[in-house]
Image (cartoon, rainbow, N blue to C red; front, side):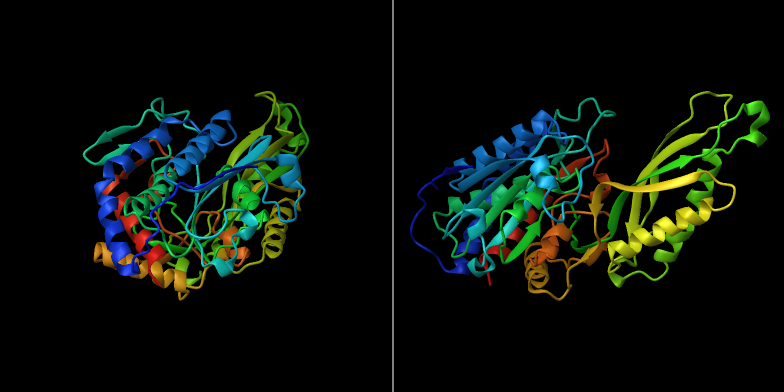
Length: 432
C-alpha cells in the first residue's frame, strides 16, 4: 500500500453557498482540462483484465496527487479476493485487481477510516472498458462540435474524469470542503464488479455515494439483476443420415430457449414501478453457443452461456431455482441431459428508496443546474450500485452520456453535459 501527503490548500473555509458558486464558475473556467482528461483516459486501452487496466489506474492516481488529494493505492491478487465471502465472480481470467482512493477534506484517507460518521461523499468510478475489436480507432479519441468520441467516453471514463474535475474546481477556489470528498477508481467493474468488492472489503463506508455511470440526465436508483449462466447439454451423437437414432443437443437448446422466454415473460409481467417503462424490464439472453464437431453428425453436446435477468426484490436463490426448474422442464422428455452452472458476473438486483436523502440532494442539484426535473428510474443493467447498497451506503447512479451508446462503436459524450454533471455533483457535495 502506498500513501502520499496532500498538497497544502488554503486554510480558509467559505460558507457553503459561496463556495458552491465559486466552484461552479471554476468548473466552466477549467472546461479544457476536463476535455483533456477524458481524452487522455480514452487513449489508454484499459480493456478489463489487460495490462493497460493498471496503466489507467496509475494515471488516475497521478492525477489525484496533482490535484492535491491524499492517495492510497492497492493491488489484490484475485485468488485472495475470491476467498472473501460474497465474492461477485469474474468474467475473464485475471491475476489481480487494483484500486485507487483519493481524499479531499478533513480526516484520513485510510480506507477503514472512511466511516459514515465522517459525512463523506464517495464518487465511485471504474477505469476499465470492454473490448473494441470491431472499432479500429476506439482508443484514438476525437473531438468535434463539442462531442468526444472513443471507447470509454460513455462507460465510464467521462464520469471518472468528472469526479476528478469536481476536485479540481474545488481546489481552484482556494478552499477546502467541510466534509470529505472521496474519489475511488476501481478495476474490474466490467468484469463482474470485483474492484468495488475489493474496495468495500477494505472497510470504506462513506455516508453516501454517487456513481457517475452514464444516465443521460436521469437519476438511476435501481438495477435489475443479471446472473451469468452456462448450460451444458449432453445428448447422443449419430450419423446425420440416421438422425432419428441420435438425441440432438441443439433441439434441446431450442426448447430451453423457449422455456426461458416464457420465464422472462412471467418475471416481467408486473415490474416494480421504477422498471415499468422498459419493454423488457428483466431481460434474459443466450449470447454464446458452442457445440458439434462435424456437419453430418447429430450434435451430441453443446454449451450455451448467457445472462439471466432477475426482478427487483427477488432473492437470487429463488431466481436461480426458477431458472433451473425451467431448464429441467424443457429437457425432461426425450431431451439432452442438462447441467446449469452459475458463472461469470453475478449482479444481484438492487433498489435504493427513491425518497432517500441522496436522491433528493442530487435531484435538487440537477434542477438548479439544468432547470429541468430529472427522472428517477431503474435500469435493466447491473452495476456496482448493488454492492454499495448492500454495504448500507445510500447510492445513486448519475453521470454523463447516453447508456444506450455504452459498449458500441458509436460511443461518444457531449462535453457540456459532462460539465453539467460536474456542477450537479459539486452542489450535492458542498451543500446540506
